[in-house]
Length: 296
Image 1 (cartoon, rainbow, N blue to C red):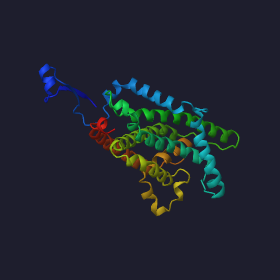
Image 2: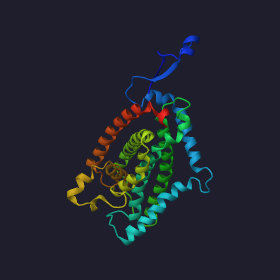
Image 3: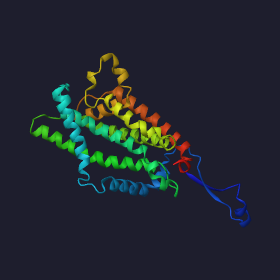
Image 4: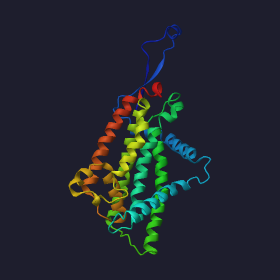
């Protein structure tokens, strides 16, 4: 968001007597909160905010970044025991642990980013009220920490695929679909930033958002193909099911990485929803940003 500096037309008597006009920082005329030029100008601040969030997260922890690896692995183990062995959910062509982990990885990135971004503004009230910088950098910085977590967990997924191929002789085919993986990951990142910035701006004024969001995210998980394949959904409901933008992101990630089918319709829906969400988030963030310092 570009800024302009102007003189305040209505001066307090003391300032008028001294002849020293007030200087007000006002938003520019750009419609978007995601002003690329301004964000690029503050790229170093984004780096330091991300580094700060990483340090705060693992400060005074015994295992540190190991928690990034343990969380998806433990969840994969639990789902494998109770759903793969007890409930015997079928995942044709894929071992159930590999199926679950490849679904949990993008889901934990998206859900963790949205949940963390929601409190990024209210948790940094001291910064909002003292100095100006593009406010969208706060949710973006938290998203940066989740990208670091995602990279570490992705390396573990690569190791898991290697174990299955060498020890259990399950081969993951290398196909052209692997080239789609960076596009899916970029779509996941934009979707997470858009949703995170939107809920963060709303949470400043309406704290109900922060209370309801964990419950909604939990429900969202079980309406997405993370621990069960979409083929388990009755065929007459699959089109409606694919309107969930997470379906295209997770199935696209899983299909591109493991050489499975790419759900073109679901991915298209995810891309459309992401574009709409990005515009909506930018508009609402800009409109609410004016009162952040007063409300937070």
